[in-house]
Image 1 (cartoon, rainbow over the protein chains, first blue to last red):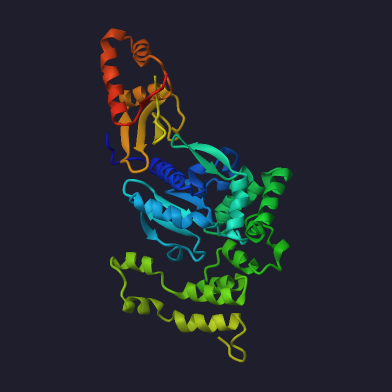
Image 2: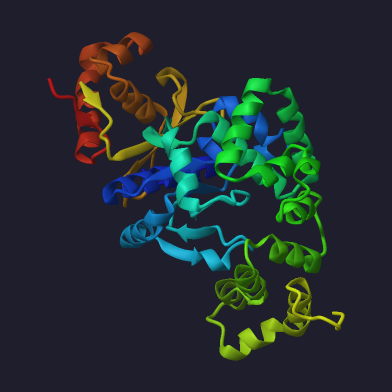
Length: 296
Length: 99
């Protein structure tokens, strides 16, 4: 009865089901997001092109204080960490876990674009959760406005300008009441800037510290240096700006290991820095106002 | 009477569609099954898939349902179907519904 050609959608659905099962075992609260967890009412926010290619992994938003518990439990069930949070995107929002025969699971500790306290934001989403059936099992998903918001925030990261254009069209086709519900939610979880980027309203949040970051992302900014500066500026404090700036310059150890096919040595890490250290540090100093009288 | 155990996930692929979850038994071609949380994905296809779906959907007399659809006599197929469904119970892919 084994089959080596199981469809990707089945592998994804099964990964969702396993994560839900293990989460219930250890009392971890999770919301299934994107991919097959999106309900029909929120489908339009996927866009017709980019978003409909189908998910290849199972995306799950985990209550931040339950992340470690769930990671440990999944490890007990044979899942291995492919990428830790700091090895993933510059937002460091998700860890990727893998188990043979299933799709990967992306455990999100927050969703990029949500700038409020992650625990409070999760609680806001959890309070209005719904239940859907996935792979024959009940799983928790965010409310319809939250599903729509998450898809808009995802599109706002600008990986496809065509997709973002479709999402903006879908936004305009929503009723005023539906738009208001998403705006209210975005206000509660402090996702107004990313939502504005995803819905073509960035001019309404010009004074926000993360405005430039979401402008750059949503316009598909190609310059990594400009993106890096925008991320540093978006940090809520000087201390976190410094930390963000430096962390973004560090080579991703796990990604380097995958590229090399072996654990990286100290020398590998040093080489991976390349010329970034000097260049990045000068730019960081300028952005933090620590570099008076010297131009980077 | 049978039902799907709480610890089994499944995905139904219809014969002419790639959106099979929640499909009707008669249109099903393939059923993928996974015992949670550590099982290996399994697949049932053709008549095996249809029998699992009929049982999973709570059809009380699977043999009679198959007999009426195929024109076979119930007596000729009932032992085979009973053995097959009991093998699925033994593998944990179905369970008897409490009476």
